Amino acid sequence: LKAGEEAPPPPVVHYHMNNVTTTADPIANRESILILTPLARFYQEYWDNLLALTYPHELISLGFIVPKGREGNAATAQLQERIKKTQAGTNKKRFASITILRQDEEPPLQSQAESERHAMSAQKERRAAMSRARNALLFTTLGPTTSWVLWLDSDIIETPPSLIQDLASYDKPIIVPNCFQRYYNKDKEAMDVRPYDFNSWIDSPTAQNLAAKMGPDDILLEGYAEIATYRSLMAYMADPRGDPKQIVSLDGVGGTALLVKADVHRDGAMFPAFPFYHLIETEGFAKMGKRLGWGSWGLPNYFVYHYNE
Amino acid sequence: LKAGEEAPPPPVVHYHMNNVTTTADPIANRESILILTPLARFYQEYWDNLLALTYPHELISLGFIVPKGREGNAATAQLQERIKKTQAGTNKKRFASITILRQDEEPPLQSQAESERHAMSAQKERRAAMSRARNALLFTTLGPTTSWVLWLDSDIIETPPSLIQDLASYDKPIIVPNCFQRYYNKDKEAMDVRPYDFNSWIDSPTAQNLAAKMGPDDILLEGYAEIATYRSLMAYMADPRGDPKQIVSLDGVGGTALLVKADVHRDGAMFPAFPFYHLIETEGFAKMGKRLGWGSWGLPNYFVYHYNE
Ligand SMILES: Nc1nc2c(ncn2[C@@H]2O[C@H](COP(=O)(O)OP(=O)(O)O)[C@@H](O)[C@H]2O)c(=O)[nH]1
Ligand SMILES: Nc1nc2c(ncn2[C@@H]2O[C@H](COP(=O)(O)OP(=O)(O)O)[C@@H](O)[C@H]2O)c(=O)[nH]1
Ligand SMILES: [Mn+2]
Ligand SMILES: [Mn+2]
Picture 1: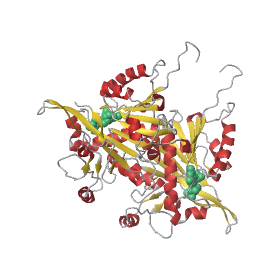
Picture 2: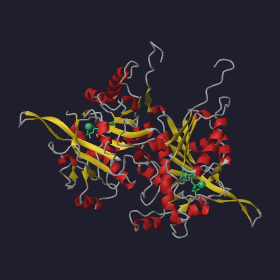
Picture 3: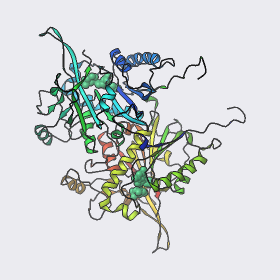
Picture 4: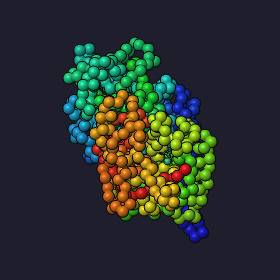
């Protein structure tokens, strides 16, 4: 400061939370959205898909959390290179702001091959670590003016460009599309699709009974032959010729792509890293939402696609 | 923008979480602290006490959440008047930043008399509303560089000026002083002190058994003659001639003054507005901390004082 100059006073900000709307027409109402991505690996297709979203980019903030270690370093470098171009002052499609958090912990599994990640024995520790990463990202990036939070995994490589508007149009507290995967079907000798995420489901009496008999620290996982839960999985409700606007009420949700009204998080809904009603991470989040009075919904015939290793 | 000028690129920020330390010597390590206050009424003595804290004010950010309605309007006006002076550019003791959130809801109880607030029947609804207010404040103000969060109620009117350093020196995830109240003791014809906050306690087999027999939505409240829990209350462990450095491990904590390592919140620990192990709000928070691996501690002989209506 020069002589006679006063230091600028530090920021004092005053927010009226009833000015932060969350409506079925978020573009007309200029609603801010925070896209949160836990990112262990960078995929160019994810970035391209993100840039292609037609929601006004000046209303979108991005938040990433990247694990410590060699893989995390590589992912950060790739991400920063893309950000440099995207956020250039000359780019009209740049985003409102971007935050990158580097974790001080390595992921519990060094190797991230799909088969290993999905081994049932590894799931509890892995999903607890994912919960902590999601919470750290959420708690440090959610602001007073955020209307919506879109959780989007870094390996979601294809969504409709109108993803945000489409999901928001249902005006639901928590809403999840159906996460599929493209693959080469050898029998048909053609590209095909198959379900990927089994965490979006409607509860069943069988699952309730299984849970009732479990120890307090046990979790009930979905999508494993070892435990038949007889839950109704949204993955299997898909009908490519069905109504894309069909909507179902859910008890568990997956987090590969997941739109949440920011008020749900502000009320305290987070991703439990501990068994919560024998559920963990995104499935536990849906249950916690319900305990706070916020329901979860799914779109069986509205698809997003996961990378295929 | 003038011709030929480029718009400034929007902020891209990159945080390394292992640079955010949380140590027993937070001043030496220049650790940032966020003081969070749910504020339904403004007390001059609270503000004077806050200003007297000797922790470097440039490392302190303040966050307030104020309810909607007439009382909230009055409290906001008083707060803003004090802030104007305190944050003046000429004031060397000003704080790093201040955020005020105005809720879009009125408190469930219009009248806030101590006797009414504390009626057992009103507690569940009231403490659920307090939980939501605390969570909204926490989720929207916690930043990536915050090391500590100090919860401080607006009616805490007297603490040691070294409160933050003193509590931090124990290097505990969650630590709570003993919250007392000054009053005129008619028998002694002199000012005296008495316990105020009964939410800091060590669990008992009786309380565990009571909880085990409760319905899933029941909560076990502390400090009510109607339910004898036989928990060990920190309020009754106080010994004015005892060691001020005595520390005990706790299972429930009160929130009138409460120091929390920011990582505890980042892991997902919040204030449950629903019964969590039959506990709610700050008591539920301690339990959630424990589920995430973070213990709670109390200082029976280190006092802060609550306003006396
Ligand atoms: N920050 C962080 N992100 C991770 C970690 N492990 C996985 N991820 C990311 O979290 C998301 C989900 O993980 P992924 O392994 O794809 O889960 P799956 O598809 O359900 O098997 C992806 O975006 C990953 O890049 C981790 O330890 N830390
Ligand atoms: N934002 C907000 N703050 C509140 C509300 N009700 C109480 N408070 C504040 O929350 C703190 C605790 O409430 P108080 O009524 O003093 O609780 P008690 O001392 O435990 O009976 C105080 O700082 C109050 O000013 C509310 O509805 N909204
Ligand atoms: Mn994945
Ligand atoms: Mn009080």
